[in-house]
Image: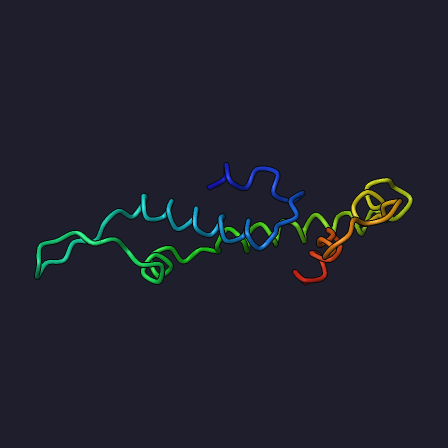
Length: 114
């Protein structure tokens, strides 16, 4: 699971990426826990998402990613604005934004996660 989280504190997750990470986590946990055997019918069945979450009672991948992002934001906020890191994290870009629905900025994601 640590391979998935490499460099995650710099990610700006979209809803599609969250769904894909959640699906990957469920796939990985199904591979780890395997199939469940039914004694009455002597068949093997796949575990449902609720059963997997009951077996694996740790935080999900999305929660871990958002918490590490918030930790990085806290470190950057304490650095002060005189360092270039804070300006790079929440700075305003020059020029116009493209037409259409504006994409989420990193600052918008921070506010949603709080």
